[in-house]
Length: 443
Image (cartoon, rainbow, N blue to C red; front, side, top):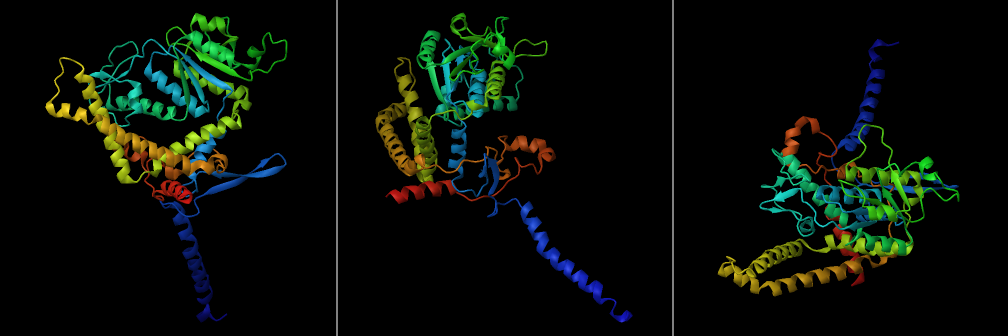
């Protein structure tokens, strides 16, 4: 062999390797970029019966993404199982129960109203009314204080604990947007409605009369081979201190107990609710998505219109709407104080009260017009919804933590490069453009 040409073969191999690397490396580099690419949508096929069905996974570039998420939740909602909360007196438990039931797919929650709910979060000089969160997502918590359900102040509570409690209230508010919550003044009133609608009533109970929430326990004494879980079931959870009332226990078709294995013979009310409801779905998976199509269409119309209304308003109109809401709320407080003979309202505040009817009318007109446009934008989609997602897990690009900047900074490197704390860029106003486009086709 000519030694002068021995360099040719390794040279050619090296060149080919370099060219291949130039093609392959960018592919891997693009996969690791913290930006959204055009092929971000994920889908795969699963075997269903004798055929296959395409399953769509969430991604930032997925068309009709927000409606697909809503449809996924709706397809898994159940009306066969109602959660009844009797005399809950702790707002933290109340908010946690609402959030949990919504997440598990319960649509109907019945509340037998307590005489009073002890707020465990105090803002400024007043205890927080949970209903106030229906009007304001940005309540100030700088001077907030935490209380126990007994009324005792929590000493040395940290800002993180206060923020966590405030977040529970906000999560409950958001859960309420997707739940049907019905309130009853008395236990008897609730029992009568459940019986009229054909529901069996099970009460959670710690007594030895209760049967364990297992196939063996539920089958005990069942001589008619009825299914473990009734076709229509209401499961009742009582107050934190003493459980369900004697009235609901005596009216129940069954008293049930979630078997525990430790020394503790009871659980926090919200924890017990989560475990029992989840266990019922395991005992009878047919509960999942058990809802008539007529009810589903009714809910879809409400949900889709709500999602559209949150995205149809231009930025300037959103600012105007927020400003009017703040003005109406503030001046309404002035009006309440004016009825007190010892009020200390200034002449300027008294003049603003005169503007209240006009401001309310402006706000009402905006809301009415927005509701009408929202319903028109989703009219066709209500009966022809997009394909739901395979499940509700978010793509990494949308997995964001609810922690603030200071909390993120405190955790530093421990949270570095985690999906929930990494900033991604994605298409802006994609949902807004879609809904506005739907509206334009109607005009």
